[in-house]
Length: 633
Ligand code: SAT
Ligand code: MN
Image (cartoon, rainbow, N blue to C red; front, side, top):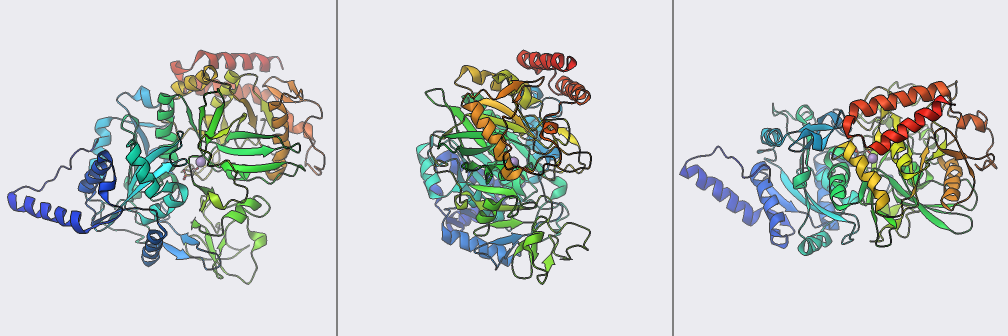
């Protein structure tokens, strides 16, 4: 353990005895839930060490039962963290401390001996083992005094699947327990799995306590000033302090499934990616699965649950955020969604944009930082049509809010629903298949108002890896970035790399030697015209792009070459029934030379400063080729 035995300042026989007695009493009376003895010795030691350091009043080992869940909900209601949303079945509203509303990328660190192993350039933050130890010792000792320490054994992926991994999250936040119960598989089955295979990722979390001892929002304790999220890949260890929100505290998600996950995947020869997974069935009844990487808050949930407008097509959802992918014994790439729920952005979700999500989220759901209504419901930007005027709205901060006249948004831009995946009416029949689903195509994309066409296809695997590496997107509210700027976000993994990005690229390139690699595409639903209007309707109409992708996967000759890759040949993108595009279809495939010269020079600069001599030759070659093609345009 990095923090080793707790360095107690207590000295002298009498004090030692007292500490020992308290400890004994704690052992005998204050453990609740599953017994510690059911866990393998390394898990029990992790719990004991954390307990010694954090000094909780009680330890509760979660069994994941309904009784436990009800008990926690009551507790959360009593302390004001959750309030019931009476309009729906078993739905709850949480309001956070307004300083704790999103992931904090600037306070997220990867810890390795040498900086080079972990990060290059500004792709993440590095911390040395010594400094990580210090950071922990400055924050965690006694941080759970007066609180219960919850222990959550959880599985990322179907329990027992060869593609799944187990974690144990220790937390002092019952909100985190309830959310982890939705987002991951927790409880007794996982304990049994641990008995078979004692390997697990250690996840230590505390919402913390401000140094001055003043908890500003007792219903949402946190310590924004000292928040830190630490990952130590060589020990499969995560320590997160100070925040109760989303990816900062639900450690199975970004911390384990992506940052630690990508390092495990590198070692074991597979991929842990920030991707949704969906199944597409065409009118002939053939089915393929596609994975797609878009940055946070760029519509992964909407695409994963899309209602296709093209007749005869069916979309089914395997996951909306993370894909773990591995070649099987036949060289087929197969993916699982390691999660068990959706932690989706609420604003913008409506019957028009995502009717399937609307059918999913109104039972057994925790809403965080959305607005509430006087009839016991929720409200956010995008639900205007569904809100009747006689129902009063309270904004995410708890203040009265009036449609049309209030100047600030009713819901926080990063407000979320946390809802069980099993409730999704189009959840794929194979979504829990322990073997995973076969992946035929990978899409990359982002929010690009200018210059990037609706869809194009990579010429080869290496070209596809280059496209992933060159991804850029407008910043969103999912993290602390406040300005709307176009940011580089390679593979939509910028905030989630667990190791050196140059090495990550090499790993991606090497996949071609391991099995049959899928086709790679780049999509952009977010082109805007001169008036700032979206040029593509998006949402269900994106099925037209998926139809082209499907046909390309099946080998149809419906593409033509362009400077940046293959684009749909004349008439190949189905537009039947698509009226009133604000611009002609051609405009969606414009490749303005000036724009692309600029884009390539940005990419080149980025590779130079951020990857430097770690840049694999194969990627440099793709860049050179693209430059040549563009200069000849
Ligand atoms: O807060 S989370 O990291 O879980 C959501 C996201 O940014 O995708
Ligand atoms: Mn995400």
